[in-house]
Length: 219
Image (cartoon, rainbow, N blue to C red; front, side, top):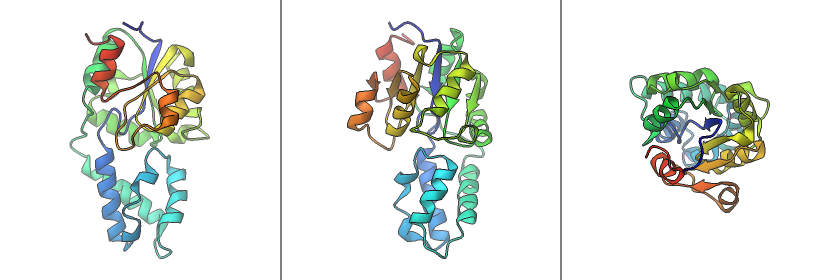
């Protein structure tokens, strides 16, 4: 069994909560509503990006007739509306958070999502009470793969980066944790692990349950 870390730092979308499918579906719907079907298949370019980065990508994806601010607003509202009554969890998310909480391991979410939105989703999912806090993309100067989110999350958890463990689903999230000096485990969701992220991780696993089993946790 790996000794318990000083803190666990989680990504959110696609890692703790199973929301990427909802995000993609509502993105496609918003594209069609704005007569921008040409961009409907490009959702993968937006995964793991913070809001300013996504808006910059919109400029390259969406036709000139689309009001980018309105598109962004309507997509985000459609996403939240879909999750108003139920936020699906990834397998093992609640069990792992409960297990770590019982052992007094501080947990922080480090997400590219806006902080208020992330807190709302985590509250609806029932995970927020387990957390020390949330560091959202609006709290740092640079988004992933820069280290800012994970450095801030480690500070919030009261841990040195090297003494924490991060859980990520995307390659760019893995590189962000690595750049911050946080040992990282990758559990791919919609984007598979690539050569660079595999080289940067301590483990690539199929699920949170599989990662916990490998670590000797929750046994």
